[in-house]
Length: 296
Image (cartoon, rainbow, N blue to C red; front, side, top):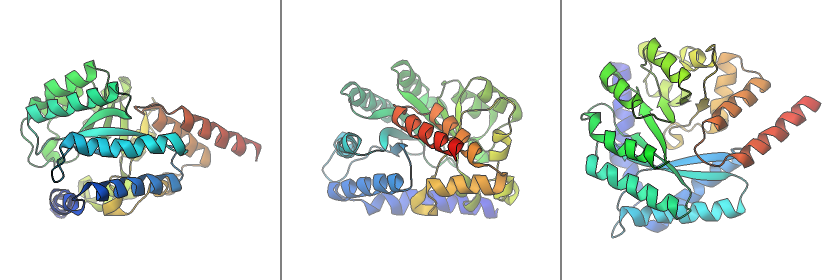
């Protein structure tokens, strides 16, 4: 019960406090720039930012997204870290019509050459309606060439077999968390080449893992040791709540699972193989780092 309480409290932050902190476009623009700067300063070379379209004051959801994209466009033109934007559909708040509008928005913006790389299914997974209502939106996104990312098997309530199989049928490019996944579906994820994005600090501190598991027992180890190396990445989800940057997540992986520097390079390459946007600049940076490691 302790883990369930912690998880509910975690999602409660997003449903109450966090969305109230940014109440106008200048604050949104300031926050976006601050987030990008923080990750670049942390050594990140390729970054995918997620946000859920919503109105702010008199500004429509599209106005708000365009304001974020204007910051990203400026960033990509002048900074060394490449950035893509994922538009999120909230499974606990949005209906099928809203989901389709977000997919249409992502499609329009991508056709304009904006840095939109995909759509995501997120939101509090404890009281989710029938996920089949989002089937059409995500199938449409896939048909249009948008990347499809899903928060997947976060808590037992959203991890019944019908739900997990339904979401896999949408042909996602990447799955987040993948905590409560049966072994046969885990094997299917690997065989299909679906990327998985794991969140060490979030899962442990929010009590999302079975039996109050510690970092040493996190399912990262199972995915990392898989015979067929999966497309594996580490996500922060969410720095504002848990205070762990990307470098900290890699340090935790190295500390608790015995990863060497070469392993961390391999993990970074696995992560880039699951990117939705243009990661060539990041791959070149990683190549240079590996060459310097080999010559040292």
